[in-house]
Length: 74
Image (cartoon, rainbow, N blue to C red; front, side, top):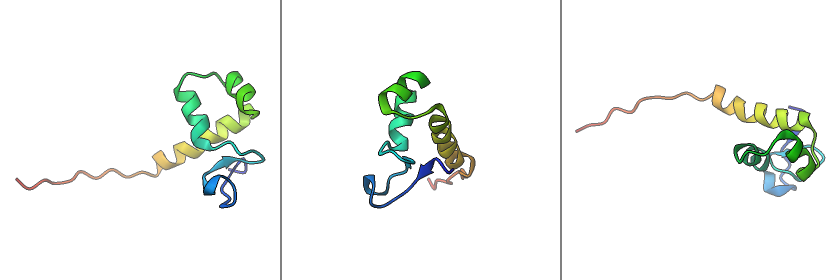
């Protein structure tokens, strides 16, 4: 995860792509919105490897997530 950094002095501590002020959530949102890798590279001045690192960063949260069913009392 050398391409993703968290620095409280940059973007209020949001995870960003190293060497930029581009937050991970902006890249993810762009992908969700249908932008291609090339479009994102041009729009934000990042590389394909940065985009892949962003996806990997987000995936690590999902991989480590545990889901527990709540028992409801009626």
